[in-house]
Structure formats: C-alpha cells, structure tokens
Length: 243
Image 1 (cartoon, rainbow, N blue to C red):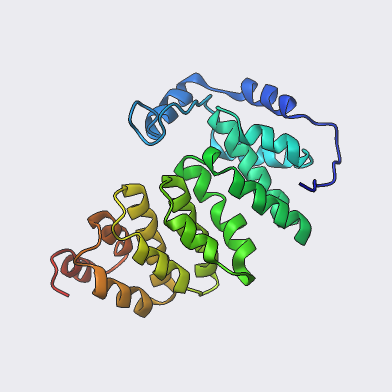
Image 2: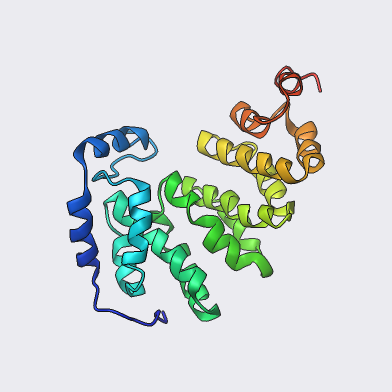
C-alpha cells in the first residue's frame, strides 16, 4: 500500500495516550448501553472509554499528519473511540488526498470492514469514502456488500449511497433498498428508511413511487423512517395501508 506523505513523527501510541487521558468512565458506561454491547447484542464486546464525538472531531486536526499505517493501528483497536478517530482521520485524508491517496484509503476501508462494526462508524464514513470514491466508477461493489452476511457491510452498502443522493442520483439507493426489503435487522431497516426519506427531500415523486410499490410488505421500521416527515394525514394512510 502506498502511504500518505508523513509530515510528523507521531505514532498510534501517542494518540492512544492522549485518548486515555480524555476518557470519562461515566460516559463510557452510557455508551456501552447505547451502542448495545451486551451479550447477543449487535455491539457485543465493544469497549468504550467515554469520549464524546465532538472531542474526537477536534482531535482530527491535532493528529491529521499521522501516517496511514499508524491510523490503521488505531482502526484495529478494541477501543471504540480509537476506531472512530481512525475513521474520521481516514475521511480527512481521503478528502485532502490526490487520486492515488483516495484509492489507498478506499482499499484500506474495504479490507477493514470487520473493524467498522457499529452504526456510528459506518455512518460517519461510508458516504465520504466509499460513496465519494465510486461517484464516477462502477458501483457493483455496493451490491456485493448489500448481499453480505455481515450486518455492517450491508449498512455500508446503503449508507454509501448517501453521497449519490446528495447529488440527486437515486437509482443505487432505490435498487439497494429493494434488495434489503427482506433484511431481518432493524439497523438496516432504519438506514434504508432514512435514505428513502433523504430522496424524498429532493424528489418526493421518486420516493413515493418506491413506497407505493412496496409499503405494504416493507419492514414497518423502514416505512416509519421513510415517511417520518410526511404530513400526518398522509403518514397515517401509509401506516394503515390506505394509499
């Protein structure tokens, strides 16, 4: 893997020491519950040290010169906040980099999906790395991810399309939502409903064309998220099957 030009002697361990000092046990306990880290839950075994997202975002500027190989060490950490900071750094590096760097970050991201293993990690990055990289390229990868057995790869597939939606390209989102209609996990239902709602903000006709075809059989959570901003009368008609 080609590396981003190294501008400092920072190491992953320097970042880890900094984060350890910023941890808050009380907030860590709240995060453990919020991100469902208990036995059998989707975030089982994840470890939090209790650092809020705005603090981590500010640290991106402090550690923006960290070499990519050091960022990868953080990305493989068992500590959630270290992985989140790593992902925020990858987004920063991707946005600032030339084409060669963007390709490296994209490849690193896709080979590391086992560590991008909660919805917040996916949602702050998929559109900005995967979606942005594929904006002018073949998007077959998204359909492979949508068919994955891994929950987080499926979430990456739909959340990556947010980049396209923001540019008024809706076809990938519609197709992937169609693929995921029978998905059993509510985190996929929520993500699909959210993206359908985002389509509706820009082109209500496109969203409603999809909904009218599928609303009777789509997961209830997906439907509720998709119609959240509809006028109450119309929302109730969808919920009661009277469209």
